[in-house]
Image (tube, rainbow over the protein chains, first blue to last red):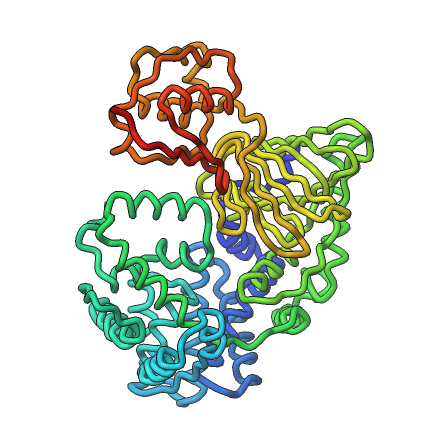
Amino acid sequence: MMKILSPGTLSPDAQWLQRLQHDDTEGLALLMDKYYRDLFHYASKFTRDEGLARDCIQEVFISLWERRKTATAILSPRHYLLRAIKNKVLKALYKKDRVPFDLPDEYDFFQEFNIEQVIIEKQLSEEKAQKLRQALSSLSKRQQEVIYLKFYQHLDHGQIAEQMDISRQSVYNLIHESLQKLRSVWATPTSLPL
Amino acid sequence: MRDYQSYTLTDLMLDEDFIRWVQEQRPADQAFWDEWLRAYPEKKPLVIEARRILESVDIQEKYIPKEEVQQETARLLKAIGAAPAQGLTPSITRPFLRRLWSAAAVIIIGVSAWLFLIKNTPKTRKTQAYAEQISTHRLIERINHGDKPDTAHLSDGSWIRIGPNSRIAYSIGFDTAAIREVYLSGEAFFQVAKSPHHPFHVITGEVTTVVLGTSFCIRSFEKDTTIQVTVRSGKVSVSGIILTPNQRLIYKKAAQSYQRLLLDHPVIVAPEITDQSMVYEETPVEQVFGQLSKAYGVFIVYDSELLHKCTVTADLKGESFYHKLDLICRAIGAEYEVIDGQVIIQSGGCR
């Protein structure tokens, strides 16, 4: 009996995109509701202007609504939206209106780590704590972005490459270098291959 | 199949399954990585190191209240020319009621089902995600006011026997959600349909029990000072502690401590092993323990080097689990202890 209530076997994302395609505004509202926080957090990495971040999110969803007839072609709304918000924010910041839009070579990435929290939770010694602070602060902006997209936005290897406009090999290298810095904190007598 | 043999630290860190295991601690992942480590024991230091690194990177994110999300959603709907009241925001009363009526129409009359929203105060990143999920799911509640158990059949094929004065709640799209979540207050027995990609969670106050396909019982009345989870078959994970059949976990609310016990009367859980087959003649004790362990799903820990010469001649048919253990131990001059829900055999060996 209850089965009647379940809308089918599609993932919620896919269902919402389908509703969007059928001009159902609730599909759009549900996507917004699910992804707003992730998009805001990602947008805040590029700008400290929260008003700008909010406006860009609005624009991203308005664009999505305008292209709703082809919405079901979007395989991963998360990836689509993250890519759109990054372009939107950087475009606004660097006033580049060229199409296609190229990512600027250098752009900010404001990221704060809960270092003290980790130190308390893991009961790190003063020496290790110092090493951790040092390792995290030595990460470059692009290394931080890779880590963020991987650990926090859960994009896959290929999606990160697309998101950052770099090759898959570069993604791998950025992760590899970041890990090299971080593993020094936990350095054990037995060295392991990276 | 990925080539795990040559897996490096970087490969692990790019592996979405690995990250999910560390960050979300799902039981399906736990089982996979336990198996993985058994297959590649030499990779254990690598896994430990990767976990440490992953856990040491904690990114600070601004907390965004639900009101902001609702406000921005309303703004969006206005911008595209849709009246906000027809969407889901800012007030959720309307779809909420609509769903209530459609639900009432199909749920068999006599079942007291209604919808409500669970209040949740987000604390960490994880519970925050959970709060978000709750806010988009309307829940069906089912209460057993009677003095006999009442059975609820869920859309995924699972069923729940709800004890007297107990209640459960679950969302309408329960079986299609990434995680099948059921809230429980009181006591209930769960028979969970297997669905590896949709883990089954039972949320009882501060304790969440995570299940794959299994049957188990939870007792969590608000007036009780403990929350108890007892496993009949399969495996569940409670706050990261794995419970196997015939084990019970007791969570003491005041002390916030866990204790794992073996039941007083363990039952046979492996249907392929019958009690009748437990007759042994000069049988190596390891084989006897193996069968006992499998039959009851209980871990039996012993030193196989010490015991490899021990044999057992005994008729264990119809005896209780503990009596069987007694008889075996007597036969080989050993003693047993139950620690942390497992049986530990102590013996000086046999000649």
